[in-house]
Length: 245
Ligand SMILES: Nc1ncnc2c1ncn2[C@@H]1O[C@H](COP(=O)(O)OP(=O)(O)OP(=O)(O)O)[C@@H](O)[C@H]1O
Image (tube, rainbow, N blue to C red):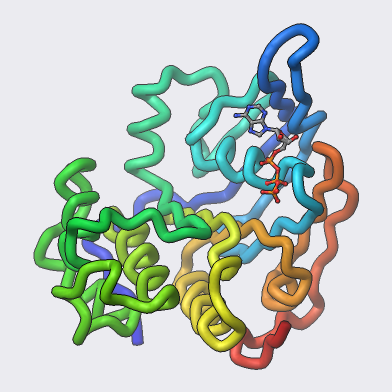
């Protein structure tokens, strides 16, 4: 099954980060969340970012996706330098390139599954309303389109979140603990979905605490205390269907 998105890809989302730092707050209250990140990611790679709580994983993906600005350093995504851009420019960059998925789905409770996807197309002006049923079908929710989030299981809600992330035709899919709130069977289904989306040609970067998730990655980046501790390549990435935790 192929997830079709309406936007024709004209760019591929390779990433180049060099000397990226992030400091939250000022003076005595300053927290160095990232302390000099150098990282290149190839288009179509599946990268898992591992690390203990507070190590800077979320900050890193938020900077890659243009949700937050780096304090210093260079961030290039899909050939576009995004460091130092204004919030409005970053917002346009996100619309053009990035789909985000979060641990707790972040769906709008008063909207149905279909409306949760449609609203993104409406807000961004990217993607086609007519593609929404196909997107929901492709994540296995053909028969749940008119259900509200509260009427869906956690795994189903996360599928809606993926359909929503795909609605604008992103070439880069970023996920922050997408299986963190799910049981093993459901989490594995979401991992399978991510693997399929990557195999269809999207760059995928996902943050997790869960070392088992790293088995499916092309490369595993371990972040400790705001620095990259190691980058490991999986000679043979596992099939998501075979991963357990
Ligand atoms: N908005 C913020 N203001 C101040 N400090 C922050 C902010 N966001 C993150 N931090 C701090 O930056 C550091 C890195 O946080 P981050 O959320 O990136 O880590 P993480 O590895 O994703 O953690 P977790 O696995 O617990 O989600 C932490 O010390 C955190 O307290």
